[in-house]
Amino acid sequence: MPRSVAEFLDRETEFHHLAENSPGAEFLCVWEAAAAAVVLGSSADAAVDVDEESCANAGVPIMRRESGGGTVLLGPGCLNYTLILSLDLRPGLRDVNESYAAILGAVARAAAVHGSDRKGTDLTVGNRKFGGCAQRRRLRTILHHGTILCEFRIEDTSRFLREPRRQPAYRCGRRHHDFLTNVRIDPAFGARMCEQFPGVRWIE
Image 1 (tube, rainbow, N blue to C red):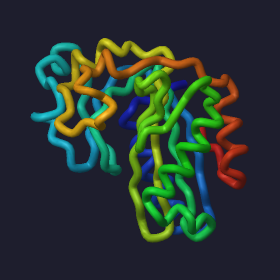
Image 2: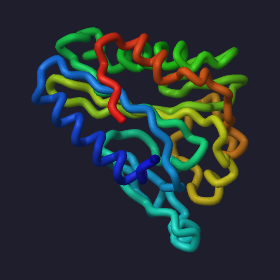
Image 3: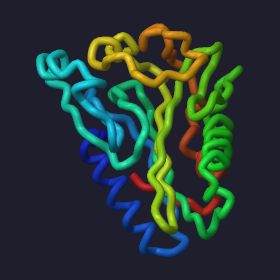
Image 4: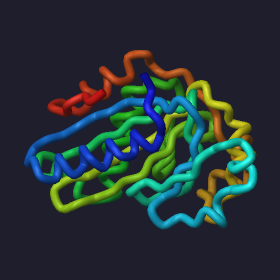
């Protein structure tokens, strides 16, 4: 049964702490929220990023995650994945840019979206974004989590989120609902992620 976004975020923190104190332990979780929620990056400002009145009227909670990055709307039709990887086992991930390239390359192969591309920390198709991600690093481990839009109500992003102050150049000033797109991904995405990251433990 799907958990709430708050429960998933708590589990991420729990398993990241466990991995940091258990050398070599690595985890993967693939999940989908049962209801919509706005999630702020660690240093994001809700007053700037979120239409708080619209969220309050619709009963959409606003919460914060431990990683950086932008503010996102999660909910049904948005597939989420969380990877907690050992920097001792995967020293190439210590470089931030290299880690995004390597991990997103693996995610794209697992998702198997025809015509997909990577632009910075975004996964795109046809110059529209279908996947985003963020990281939290500790001494021995990296938590990398991301989203893939598959059957998401994209129009809700413009309802609950304000336009971000910082935007990639390829966005060209487009609003959320004109910039984002849904894709069809391989139904075996979770299993294919395990193949891309041998040794990870899949957690429910």
